[in-house]
Amino acid sequence: MANPNTNSASSPANEVVDTISAAPGFFGWKVVAAAFTVAVFGWGTGFYGPPVYLEVVHQSRGWPISLISGAVTLHFLVGLALIPNLPRLYRRFGLPIVTFAGGVVMAIGVMGWALADKPWQLYAAAFLSGIGWSALGAVAINAIVSPWFAAKRPLALGVAFNGGSVGGVIFSPFWVALIDAIGFPAASLVISAGMLVTLAVLATSVLTRSPESLNQAPDGAPFGASGLPASAAVETVAPSVPIRLFHDRAFLTLCIGMTLALFAQTGLVAHLVSVLAPALGRQGAGLAAGASGVAAVVGRLAVGWRASGTSNWRAIASYSLVAQALGCGVFLLADGSNPILLVLGVVLFGLGVGNAISVPPVIANLEFSGGDAARAVALIVAISQGAYAIAPAVFGLFRELWSDQIIFFASVVIQLAAISAYLFGSGRTALSRAASR
Image 1 (cartoon, one colour):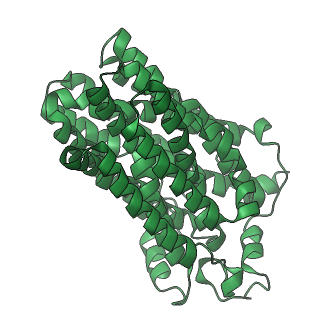
Image 2: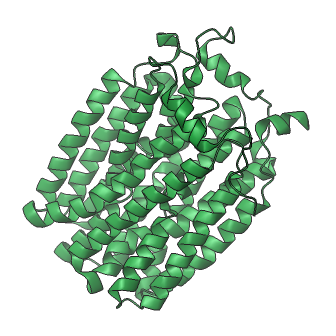
């Protein structure tokens, strides 16, 4: 595997220094902070929330794990139809409106999870929460950040996507503690209210701005240095070359790699609290899930510090999957009863959680140009979400047919297949692709 740190011109440390010393009036880093916050709530309610919802509903209603897992699957499956259409919705209604509306629908959906007393109500709630998750997930973060950055786009996206990991750190234990203290309905109301107030402020004060409206160029460079507006400057970083994505090996391997990685990850995360609870208790399981979020932040920060725009990001994605596979191996050794090994498994698995979601969009932005990159990101996120949506139900069925341990073995097999897909890709940048045509 190639060394991720292959940039000889400037080190990542220098890149961070250059970023900090960029034009003091550059609004792009405020946008990154806003995207970070959106990711905190998006992942905290839409990705790390369902494992808690599953366990709480199972304990309070006594419904089978497989039935509730089906609702979690529907939650993720909704994105298959919505995500490819998000760029169109952004053009028609605007990014701020779509993002805030996603938060409103998410809040209604989470309340539905808390109040459902019949299975059909649970599935209706999952449908709504799935819409909210799609509107607050990876495509939204990419759409918020990308117009403001060109050369520093990988760094900016990495910082923004860290919000997802922080969402896991905060919400995994917070959901459990708040539910135990005031009940699921009241907890969902408190968290939803905080989310909607925050999103309303961001939508009106930050997301309404664009580089052109502030006369700013990407990365904080002096406006007009290239003689083009900001959006055009982004396009000139890599000349746009019409490509047929589904006939392109780089796209196909990227899509397959992300899909397999997230299938294994989502299936395991959806059942993590439930699997850990017998040995660690529900509070301990929530804290352990939060620890996976801390590990995810560490893993993503390590990548952000060591990697640059010229690094081999496919190798980085593969290293993250190796860490997750090792974590699953430790889970198998723990056999559901050794608390120390269970926590170690959570940490190792968590090291790759953030990168599994954030690295593929970076690869797409590096390997494709202009509109192709935006289209590739929307497609890989939609396809992967459509596939990994069934992971909670599949893993739930595995647990009922065999045992909890089978899901860790299945994850390892899928992660190894994802590594193979990533490494089989060409990994060429958009510029080299253009030169070869």
